Picture (spheres, rainbow, N blue to C red):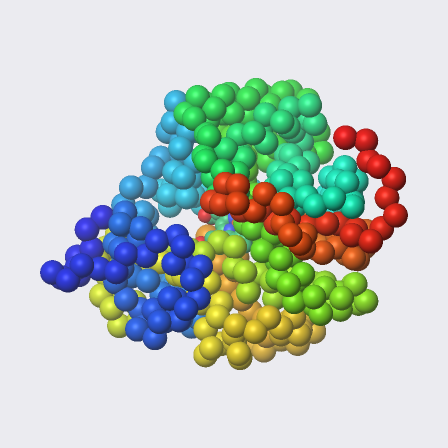
Amino acid sequence: MECPHAGSVPLPVIGAEMLRDHAALTRLRESGTVEVSLGGREDGLMVTRYEVAAAVLVEPALRGEHPLAVSMRTGADEEACDEEQLFFLPTEEHLRLRRTVSRQLTHRRVAALVPRVQREADRLLAAVPPGEAVDLVRVFSRPFPVAVLCELLGIPREERGYVRDYLYGWVAEYGGASTVTESAGHALSRYLKELIAARAQAPGDDLISAMLRQGSADAELLREDVLAAVRFLLVAGHRPVTRLITDGLELLLRRREHWERLVAEPGRLDATVEELLRHVTPTTLASRYAAAATEVDGAALAGGGGVHCALAAVNRDPERFEDPDRFDPDRYDPGRSDSGRAPNAHLAFGLGHKHCLGSALARAELRIAFGALLARFPRLALADPAPGAEEEPERRRLWVVLDPDGDHDPVPR
Ligand code: HEM
């Protein structure tokens, strides 16, 4: 999209890496809200200050559609399986889809799922040889959120490999080169359609059955909505969790005093997870689009123009967070509330009408993941030296030994 304010001077290009580069983000924040080219794909305003982002994300004038808003009826068609489209739905369809999910993905459902999430964490960790160097991404932080989504959606265990392979292919950065093909996308859609039809016939206690039970005058439309909702949850609900577990654990192990403190005081885990969410900020962008010409932080924005909040910058804005680069779990104080805002009021889950639909589930699974690692493997350490560090450098790995000094029986492989 051509930015109407672009002058002859080329706009700074902001790539995915820069959205995690804190030195670059600090410089950008000093310039205030600026026009940028997002990855060379789309021009728009970039917001790096906390107060501006908090206002932008909830601003009614910025509830417009992406200029390329794609109809969900097309998105639910197995011939059009570009999951990215789900993030650019027209307003009406976005509202309907959110309603379908949020009425059922409640705190109560998350609480009921906790024992199963715990079981998935325990099952994965029990299969890891405790005395060997292992890549935590491969054995735990990548499979765990996928297993949780399968539990949530009631995907039978014997069919999970299929969903898992599809999702791993999607996460290029965590799994090497992206391997998702169009036909894999179509096949997943077909599989999910069959699953939804089966749940309509014989409901279970899973989220798909609950969404179908909501009922609708138009049963066909409801099934399409449920299909889109499932695809939305699958695509949005694994990568940030994988990143937070991986980057978060690495941080805790490199600054070992934080790990040791958690081992001694596991009650501090909730606060630590909140600070990890702020410090790591796994999802780096939250975007809004102007319904009509407007102004953002003094900058003019044409109708349809995008405002992109760089959440990693926002979450380290010194105006909002004292000594923002310092990892400090004590920032979080759930007992205190300043006019409704806890002191660690990070925006890692966004805000407003597109706020993360899975935040309650994410928090539960993060507590369970770190809790299981702490309780089972208090001596957990980074592997030194890390084997295979030179292989596939673009692929994120975290080499650890779960129990370096333990007395281990050989684990059957
Ligand atoms: C650490 C974990 C997670 C983080 C940091 C995270 C962060 C985010 C952020 C920043 C957004 C955009 C919010 C906005 O524009 O205001 C978002 C949207 C979304 N998230 Fe999450 N997320 C996480 C986990 C999950 C999980 C586990 C699920 C599903 C079970 C999920 C489902 C979604 C969906 C469906 C959206 C799109 C909402 C919409 O467009 O209306 N997320 N998430």
